Amino acid sequence: MEWVELRRHERKESNPDLGILSGRLLLSLQQEVYETLATQGHEKFRPKHGAVLAYLDVEGSRATDLAQRSGQHKQVIGTLVDELIELGYVRREPDPDDRRAKLIVPTELGLDQMNRSDALFVRMEERLADALGQRAYGDFKSALREVVRLRRAESD
Amino acid sequence: MEWVELRRHERKESNPDLGILSGRLLLSLQQEVYETLATQGHEKFRPKHGAVLAYLDVEGSRATDLAQRSGQHKQVIGTLVDELIELGYVRREPDPDDRRAKLIVPTELGLDQMNRSDALFVRMEERLADALGQRAYGDFKSALREVVRLRRAESD
Image (cartoon, rainbow over the protein chains, first blue to last red):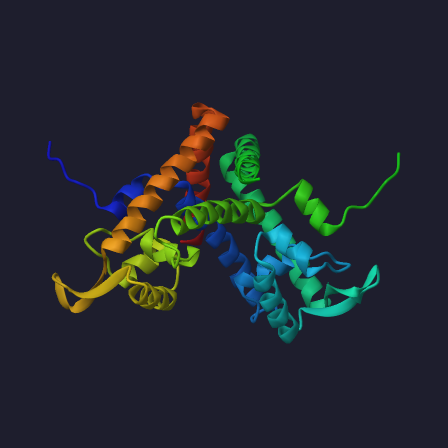
C-alpha cells in the first residue's frame, strides 16, 4: 500500500468541517431562491438582501429588530435597506407606536418576494424530506436547531 | 383560549427554515473565529476572506480551484485575493506546472491564520460533540453532509 499525503483542500473535502458544510448549504439555498426569483420578476434582488426581507414583518419592522434577528450589524442592515428602497422593495415610514422611530415596510414587490421566497424554502425542505425520509429529516432539523441554540447559549 | 396570530418573524422564530438555521450557524462560527483571531495578530482579517483561506493549499492553489471549492464566482475570489495580498496573507506566484497560470500562495501570516482557524473549528466541533453527545453529534454531521450532497446532486 502506498501512503499519499493529502493536500489541505483534499483533507477538507474528505472530512469537511462545520463551517464548510453550513456555508455550502446556505449558498445552495440562496442560489436556488435567487435563480428562481430572477425568472419571476425579481432579477435585481440579490442574496445579500435576504438579511432584510427574510426577517421583515408584513406590517413593517424596525432596523434594530432586523439587525438583531439576522445577526448583522445595524450599519449593514441600513445599507441593505437603502438598496432595497432604491429597488422598490421597501420604504421607510414613521412608526405609529413611536413617532421618533422609523419602520421598514415592504411594498407590493417586497411582499411578492417574501411570499415567493417563503414558499420556495418550504418546497426545498419538502424535497429534502422526501429524499432523506420524513423522520430522518425531522431528526436532522431538530439536531440543527439544537446546535444553533448551543452556539447561541455559549456566546451569551 | 385566545387565538393570537403570529407575525411573520415570530412564525419564523418558532419554526425557523433551513436558510435561517444554516445562516445562523455559519455566522456564529465565523464570528468566533474572527473574534478569537483578532486577539492573535489577525485584526485585519475579515470573515469574507475565509472563502479564500479556508480552501487554500499550503503549496498554493489556483483562483479557479478556489472559486470551485468555495462556490463563489471567480471575480469575487479575485477581489478577495487582492485584499489578502494587500493585508500580507497571500502572494501571486507563477504556477511551476503551467507558466501561463498563477498560484495563490499563503505567506507566513496566511499559514498562521490557516492553522489557527483549522484548530478553532476542531475545538468548536469538540465542544458541540461534548454538549450533544459524541454519537448524536456524529449522526447530525452525517445528516448535514447528506443534505449538502443531495442539494449538490439536484443542482447538477
